[in-house]
Length: 399
Image (cartoon, rainbow, N blue to C red; front, side, top):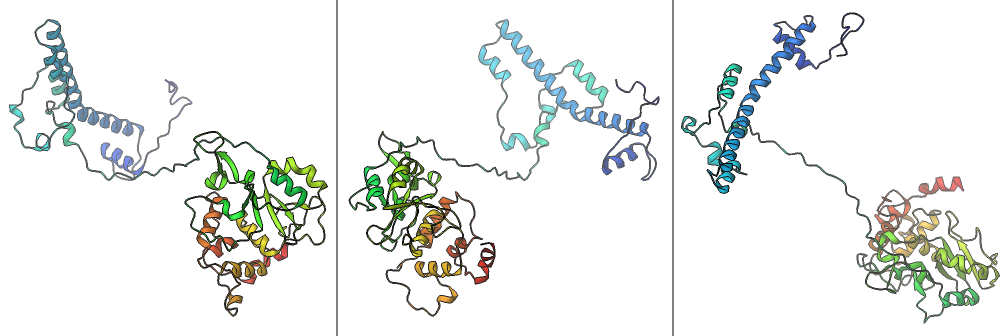
């Protein structure tokens, strides 16, 4: 309809792959390289249409015979000549056939054929002689190799209800006095908070007894099965809180670090500002000394030991170390081999009897939510790869 002026201002261009080009030449009886005229394309298109009609004519004829058979059975049923069971037998087609029915040699001339004059005449006009072939579909089956399709399915955490925040009286008392009550359940040893049953076993007597996390920090969602039962964030990797706020104290002479939740920090901030026993320190990289910004202003002796800060960084999932000395100190604590520790012999007292690397790898994987961390400093340590001083040169240049 849009080619009414074809040849008078309108033109048409044909595009086709190489195999179609060859077929057009064969249909027009031309050799490769000869100019193809639009009439040659129309000749090829009409020829392909005729071939398609001849190939599909047996299916059309079979459908017509099936329709005539069902219509005749329905008419007989309406005239009470056959029962409903006989009607159903005529209408139904088998869902499957045996191999013998599909491929066994048979004399098709013995099979009853419903003769429909109009259909037979049309098939003869089309030059179709096998219009009564009832096994056309079966004979055209092909054995193919099925391509395996893989679809990525993201497994999301099950729905959970957020736990209600609460600031324990023991935490308020710690802000005032800087002393952790040993009988309180509001303070959980840092690595004891990972009570995930999938986590590898760990030695609890090696980790520092002066680094804690509050129960409100560890409690993220409620457990199923009743009000008041709560689930710690370490039970479910998707619900872990990041380590952002650390409260430190030196009231007993030994430094104590307590990880707080954002809710606790917001509630206790006025008392922390006026406290002379504790300092609130945000954990930001690369401020591993925890002295960038303190509330209130930190005293000159309020410096957490580097070994204690190293353990906090492991708990928080930090991936990069400050310098090569930090790397050696961490390897010495974890009983991991390093080039410059080869001549030291036995490592420090109370070191691990069993490698902590599987447990730390599990903790870091939870913190990173499944993202790969193998190329990082911690990733290389946990995978048994050595670090050199030059691996820290870029960090020294940027500080």
